[in-house]
Length: 313
Image (cartoon, rainbow, N blue to C red; front, side):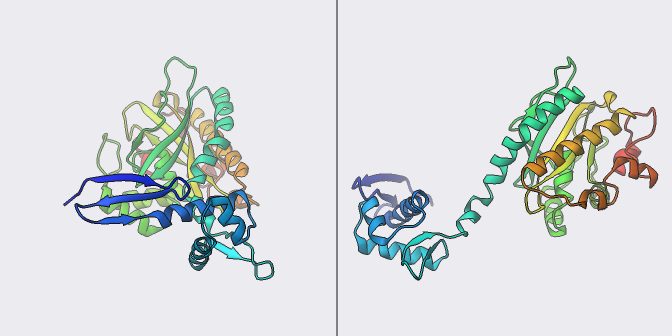
């Protein structure tokens, strides 16, 4: 049963927040609010004494000391043994880890995307995975009359998206299996990959090449090539894609789009602190020219992307 929730605030200095849960049960979260106030105070003044924090927040020194001791106990605050002053610990970064990449990658990617649109005259997307779906964070739209529209905020199945596939390809096998089990591989068009083993094989090839293609898998007549974006740790946190009508995704045009998407993604990765250090060159099939030599070319001269290319891309 759900009870109505009401909020009341008492004591302007203490920021006391009382949440009523149920007809006769009050649970105060004053300490939680004060703890966050304290973290904010340490963010503004990285090294502070108990007295300074208490004065800054308008609370008793004993209260400040108790909160600092609690926060230190769970690892979010550290105390200098010599000066007895408190500061935030590196564990605080963990709280921001799930938010900062998306914010940072969009800011770093946008200039690259805008330049890429000028170079290839096709729409460029930036995407991430959220709750086992691919979500478009940003779009730079092509000026051409017949082009892919702006898709910011759109979310959809991973298995029919080049951005989704190129991100998922670098995830651990249990993550892939969970997505298949929970989300399934629904058929959106006749070219969607719906067989679990085919999809696993597909992801392995995407990972070995370093890029993915979607042609008519999500919507007939639309195609997309995508490459992974890595952060300073080398983790794939997003994908950059170039989208166009499939009639414009023929060789040698397809080869150019793949190369440009990879170059754009590498620039964004570098701006996020990723140092390839030769890793791209060592990645199997990372260069489309190398793929042609080994039989893994994205397509063949004069042909539109076909079912056989999609199935092995």
